[in-house]
Length: 154
Image (cartoon, rainbow, N blue to C red; front, top):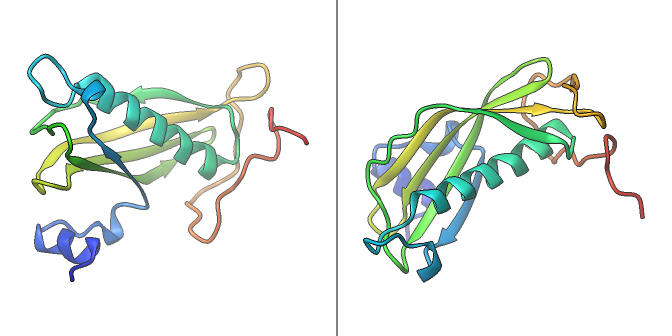
């Protein structure tokens, strides 16, 4: 049995050093466009949601918002029932921001669906102003769960 890392290396893509956050989705009927393939808007919504979760956990702030998404080039698609894998990797930390790269592939066909070179999230304070976060690298041992700037108290 091959692992996902073995499969990635066999495809000529070594995700081990590139992807630090993964999630998977099952393409369902409500995710399809008029041609019966994955609707690009659904995929972009999923990527933005996963990127937001990743940014919140890396910046330790629930008020991390999308600032910028670079060019998007769809190179293949997915059909109903296909499984897709989305991967993210932090590429840079700014004073108030986190920049990441996204890769999406169809796990059934093993083809790349798209790559986004730059997605930038900004950490905000309670007033919606950019908030310095103080981080310079990703955390792998644990997530930086939000502890301030609007976090819940129970």
